Image (cartoon, rainbow over all chains, first blue to last red):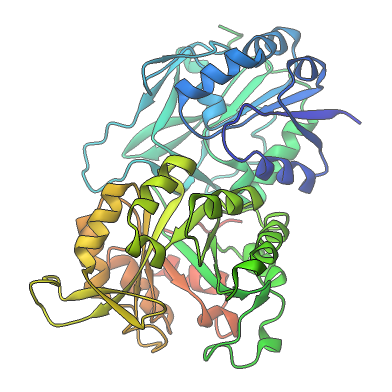
Length: 213
Length: 259
């Protein structure tokens, strides 16, 4: 059976992701070992917290290089929340240079309506705008659980797989090659979220839209 | 846009659903893990557990309980009751709770809020406040006062001022629990809820007084609340989570309707 590795870089509680993997029958381990990451069949890159401290930990531990290696090796990777954000080139959070697995920037919500709260927290609809094996099965009206003050803005518009609305439309899922990332906490989004993890567990890492930038 | 949230609250003592006035017959309510799973499958948006375990040496039982729920329920879990230190908060987080509720201990030592916000992230710290309607005075210009110990001890702290202070200290969310409305099943305290929801920039969860579906609709519209907390309404089977959500949806309140 293939093994899923959940990247442990001291960024929040990863066990909720592991529990969700187990619920859908995935063999998932939590590991901070770059060598184990290089051997993994698939990788989940979760995280909550701040971009700068997360990046510092990734560099110090050697996990940043291991993630770059996994991208070129074609390993299916699922980024979640902060894991997705720091996969991009740069984050406005603390003006932080990030991993650059995907071309793009992470931007802070700048909202006109003073009644709208940041972070964007709660259940919101996710609309698929580009078909992808991992998002297949998400239907109109399906909602996922979000907690974030920043959102991903990939350079290549083809990379945008799904959007959500918070005053204006923002990218909440992106995919390039063997990388797919979601801004919402799919592990805390009930059945629709578990289904997404199950589909990631069955995905071979192929996606032919846009190509890696 | 964000949906409004339906949140169910379970009082737990040493891993079991607590008996209280509201829990006439615990056998009818059943095992809390089972109850949590049932609500989750019926469309509940978030779960709150209040640990009312009396002695601190029994806290391990609560942690095991949170772990058991987290293995079966894949929506946000919030846990409160007796959180006095950052270690209490981080232990509960490791067990599987997303959000930690602080209440009495934060009133007595407000820095607890900022310490928890620093340790686990502001968005995960919920300030739960028990509020009593009082005469307007210099100490309580809003006409509402903070009480602790289940409403028994008045603190001389103005509720609106405390909400703003909690937000400034780093609370990510507020639970506004009306002691006057609690247990009456006559509806939430709309004036109080709206006053606080309009004053802060963090989500407000209304608590206390829900007895009819209309009460939820009122507090989520007129009361300006982001979420409505229910307990006995669903525990005894008078209403279901899905039924309440369907009602709210039909009334035009934006709810998550697919699960």
